[in-house]
Length: 88
Image (cartoon, rainbow, N blue to C red; front, side, top):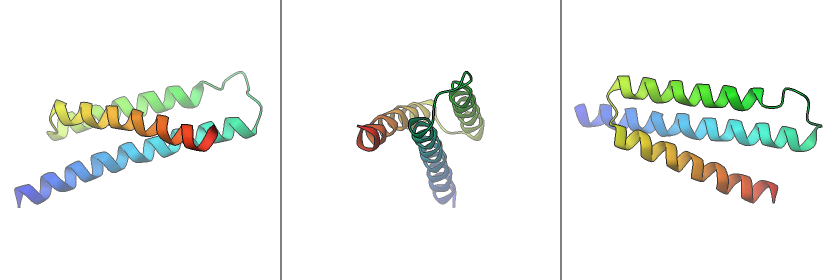
C-alpha cells in the first residue's frame, strides 16, 4: 500500500513539472507569434513562483530533496529540448 502511494506521489510530481514545461513552451510560442509588450516577463515570474510553490508542497508531502532536484533539473532539460525542437 505504501509503495503504491509513493508511486502515485512521484507520478503526480513529474506530471506537474511536465505541465509547467508545457505552459512555458506555450508562452514562448505566444511571444513568437505576437509582439513583445512592456510586461512580457510577467508570465515567467508566474512560472518561477508556481514552480517554487510546487517544490515547497512536494517537500511538505515527503518527497526527498534528491527527487525534487532531479525533477527540477529534468524539467529544465525538457524545456530546453522542447524549445530547441519547436522554435529553432
